[in-house]
Image (cartoon, rainbow, N blue to C red):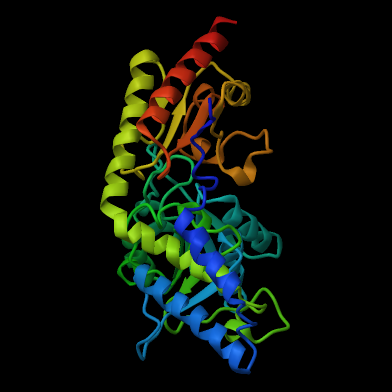
Length: 382
């Protein structure tokens, strides 16, 4: 039988309509959009139309007198690095990151700490929600940047970003949010959130790999990571890819057309999966279950089992899942997210991440539950 793919938080299969839209771009043979000749200008029009449409779908505005900016990048990791390093390059003040951030936020903030910048970690509750009372305390000292993800990539727990923004405004601190796991799953309004910078990645919602974006609020200044070109106002130099931008746009449009139905269906499938597992394995633990969560993500633990052994056994049984972020999949270190939540060692050691997508069927969920139950019982019997 075909493998059951429950690792959509790592990447999603590209939608056929996105492939078609990108293929048409390649057939049309667009030139370099930075070129000044007719063919370059033709490519530029398509690129900018895609940029404006993506921004509008994300709740940003590139067309008014107080226009925001949408900078194309290679994906979420580059966008997070650009936000963290670019927004702190020329201004003093400490950096605050939540304790459950993705590795692509932890990495650049660790770099800032090594360079002498003060970096503080924002605590989360037992349910994995950023502690706003702790944030108030941390903001008592001058702060340049606060970075709090919109939805956690391991547990799916949604974060109180709007409330954090209100606190940060009072302290004159910039706010960045990594919205990679939320965009294309739930409605996201950039201006409504009130953040200064927001990270997005197309391959998380059935778009192409190799393209993402950093959305910047009007008036926010940022230093580039790359030098040697004038593209995108010098913030991210390098030749922009028309086909990737069109694919990005098309994937977001497809989500918009089906947004309510997709979210409701994914939530139903997630609940069905969790219910089946907990009925057969009542000692299992759903991490963050009491907090608002993304509709497609569950972090479930089987205390007493080893997560790596369980992952490999499930892979051999035809089920694709993960033990956490794909960016840390080669690491044997326990999940920093679950540790930050105060989970006991057996819970951390036995946790899996299961993430659903548009292509996940009712039959997939039923087979997945049956497979997990069988493998877990086999490992326990050893």
